[in-house]
Image (cartoon, rainbow over all chains, first blue to last red):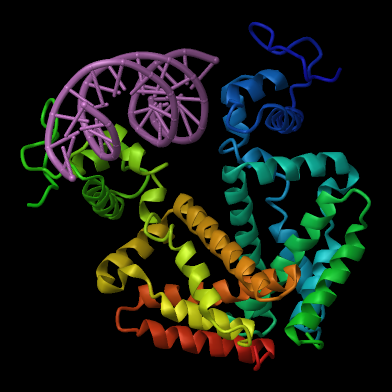
Length: 205
Length: 205
DNA sequence: GTCTATATCGCGATAGAC
DNA sequence: GTCTATCGCGATATAGAC
């Protein structure tokens, strides 16, 4: 079934195994998630992942900087999209609403396969090293958002705080979504932002 | 001078070198900060640090889980203090004010030696791995705060959001303090919380 | 791809501190 | 003596260099 049980043929690829870098990266990502879920993150070596994906360990590190990055590669690189989405929101829209619109415009890529999203979440929550990486990604995103808000005229301090609020809301929505298969992501996001507005007393933000 | 140039005597400690775990840990912390500042985090090996502290590399890892933890060990373990400080605030004090009081009651341990705090901050900001760890520590603190707020009667969601706001404010104040030697920490903290209140439209929080 | 540094952890023996 | 911290040595695996 698929390439999951493929063993690297001596001297190269197994017959018919696609050689494209993107394909290999995909298989590595899948293999990593599977193995992390099956045996746990620590007991899974980079070599294990590479073997299941039908490549060598060296190839693994060519695609991903480290063992953690495998689960976050998809999220990275979307920061430009996010900045663009925020810039596209008219300047007279208040900050929270602007973030809400931008976030709604870029739903999670894994929406297609919820089972994967759930597994991924479970693995991350069970692994301190992965939670750390997730926080770092979140912080980077908050930085991007803050910069975009500053471009909309907010002061540095304001921009930073609103960005924290907004990304916290986003994180909450994503978390809830990937924990509950029967949830509608967009609705969750809208509800979360409404709750933040009410809680924080900024109905016009 | 001091134990910095001490080499572990073959078969054991150099004569008179204190064997207490706490002393060794202190020396390791100092040595690590020095070396990280001098050569950078990546070019500093655990063996380097251990050698400067007069112990073996194995001992380093007995005291600290990894190379990053050295710079955060002091911050850890104060979570109980923080929880206690929050519990000590009367229940009728609103959440932001409660956090402000609790934080003011536990100023940073390095306040005594600002040079160290500045160096530490510079090293952390220059090292992605250390920033990641710092974020993780912050998140853990936010978790502790959130739990304390829930104990004060806030709903889970409220508690989490306020905790994020409060720890963000704390982080901002600490950051500003450890970047500017002439700043008064307590005043910074108060000013930061005031700014958050104003910005967020919750003058009574 | 191969080679290498080195981070990290397990284990048994040893040696101050109380 | 019993602790507890350290040593010394080895094993595995990550990540970067060549």
